[in-house]
Image (cartoon, rainbow, N blue to C red; front, side):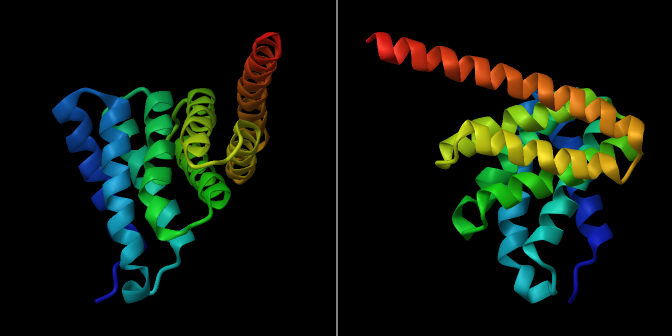
Length: 191
């Protein structure tokens, strides 16, 4: 039995809708649902003939579609998607930076296609990448850059206006990260 791309997307969308409506906590509901579905789907990739990259893209697409459908805050949903992806891939040996980039790409592409808030989605993806990536041993700079790269590629599939919106959002967020890291270095050197 082969699971189709649209089957995964619809399943994830339906579960995200149920989780967000059921709990009201957009970030936690999205993170938990994505992590559970992704971990199970990755284990089955060999059986269904899909690559891990395809599964990541489908889960991100379904999660964004569910969040947009219920009118959830896309920034919180995007952050939950990213952290959930990293949790879901943790035990499978999937490369962290590849996961971040693929997730950002699919989430931004679908956010734009659905008329969602690209700035909020890009910001949530970068924040989630940094939060989840650093827990997995990746530097904040690398995680943020991977999220920005994937988001810009996804926006590039949509058009120049989407690229401009995403670029502004990720530059703003990455500047905040650099400033915070600089401040931490100064505090550490004073100790």
